[in-house]
Length: 86
Ligand SMILES: [Zn+2]
Ligand SMILES: [Zn+2]
Image (cartoon, rainbow, N blue to C red):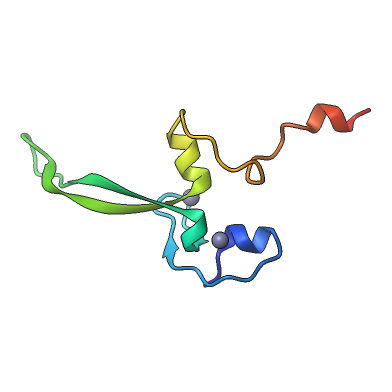
């Protein structure tokens, strides 16, 4: 599998991971690796596990989930729609 974000900018780079949320392939440059507490559904009581689990997301999903995080300008799209009408 190839990196989706690289392919969008006409680069061909092998993917090293798959986004946990949207399922696209991502390279090291286009992924965000988080350490999240693991979850296990076990009826009532504590459902988080003691040790953190790895969660890989693409930068688009990461920015969507982290209000304070701004993705690189190239990744953002749609902000110039009004300007193009002139
Ligand atoms: Zn990439
Ligand atoms: Zn994603």
